[in-house]
Image (cartoon, rainbow, N blue to C red; front, side, top):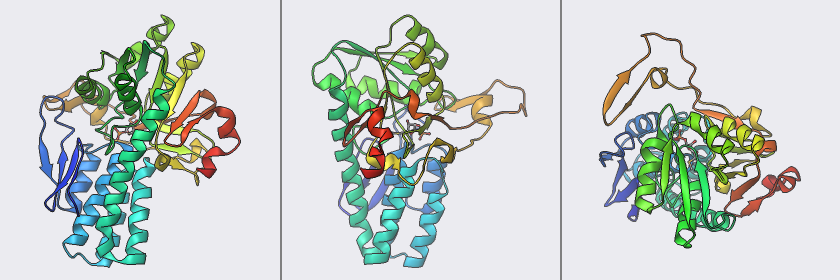
Length: 339
Ligand SMILES: CSC[C@H]1O[C@H](OP(=O)(O)O)[C@H](O)[C@@H]1O
């Protein structure tokens, strides 16, 4: 496989490495990833994360195994082990399905090419999304975003953050309110890191401050990513997205979901069919990261920790995809079934 280099994943001289997102923003530590066990642990622990990126990572790992001479039977087994790591992000399933179809039709030797194609496709999709979305954003906009959807979540410039970067590149003035995004603080740790790299003016807030900002008229538009978009336009995204959408509708703030076509699941009729990943209680009982681990809740405190929630299409102003911006009436007419 040719060398592939992105912000948080790289394949160089036959070796796959992952930028450990647990350690960001204070430490930029690259870790080798040469086995299924290692990739599974990294995906489960969100050392590599983001719907598009986990699909790319799993695909590059399978391609690496194929280059090591691993048998077809074993490659199929490893693909299914990787599929089970995180149930919500459909990009992982789509990438693995494409890799397995290539394995069936052309054999292990074709897997490196397929993984390269998936990587470069994601880069291209991100650029198209950024262009489509930036056209919607007015000069001087105050944008609010949730979780992390940039070059740490994709092989390219990102989805919602890709739009933000394009707005900046077009010379428009902008400011971004960054939801810290409890429990794992993807916004507070990762989006702030990306805003710094992009030179985008931003302000970090706790998630519970977003409604007040909308009530004060300080949010002009909300841009969020997605982990799975159902055929009717409902979508799953980081928990906290649904409450943002409800408050946005109450305050008439435009609310856009931003994603590549590979995040659309045409076989999923609506949001009720999207599996929601439940995660470790320790993530809510405290917090951990490059600074160590702090537990503030009493030991064994009961916890509810869904990693995602579902936002109904009726709360969405528009769907910003690589194929353009879709309005509710287009989605209701079945646009997502014919991308
Ligand atoms: C373009 S990434 C989409 C999506 O993935 C993130 O989830 P996680 O950090 O758990 O991998 C978040 O929901 C983003 O919006």
